[in-house]
Length: 411
Image (tube, rainbow, N blue to C red):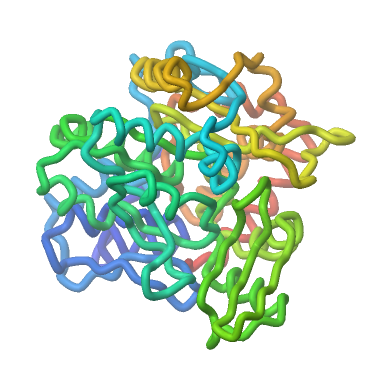
């Protein structure tokens, strides 16, 4: 598979968008000169870069070097011992935050939030760059700079809507401080790839954390949840997708005091996951392979499927780099988190969706290239080995469905 052609006159960014390949991470806005790109919602409810000033070939090449719509690849030296399904693994554990409030407010045992609190308290970073609920709009996802435990708790919990955490990267690096970054797997992959051409990233971002992701729903999915609940958006004062328990309830609060709730399996399983952007359908990395530490729901099984019964949260904690493993061990030693070693085979029982996704993605990306003449380039991600574990008929059916969708994508 080859790179996307830098076509004219549309330009790189417009070519990516026209084929539904954009992840909406916002990195191109940070790479381009100030004012050249603005990331905003499009008509489909996804965050997309709007090119206001044409980019020079040099700027397009820098974007192309990092953009996850063009490529996601491990370097040769990094990929020798990767697991074909789960990527680089230095440690596999399940556990939870030992701070009860952090454990409850986090979406899955508070693993990420607890580690972030430790990074701040220990002085390993000056702040954390993470997505939180907008201060003026309860439906907005905004980048928050967290300096305290209270800040981290405010950002705790999943946000199943578009976010562009890298759009402000230029300004963050200009601060000259060290910070931890938390983002979706594609955000972290983009930042890791950008670090290969921008040394300031490695100097100032010593830790990158992520979570397992099943895809980014359009903001229209959130509107659909609110409508299903019968709430009045004009009266909205707060909206939470989950957390405050495990898995936690989707919760809407109005200014008249009315509260509306929906369980996780109904909100995500019947509404939000119907609004995923096309790029997520061909994503090779829902498990955060480029992060130092990844946390996810360590679901308990029931009849071969995850059990979403409310209970105390439990995090799946994967350390993917030596730095990430040292961080997790330190957090355990200081009683920030409690965690036990986990056999790698147990991950599939906790995250069966990610197994199917990794096994199917090679067929999906090949189908996209056949339908559109272009697709992202994925290298050293174990896709061939992963696909060998798929049921051939299901693999072909998945590829065929992707080909049909790809023919009409304009996200």
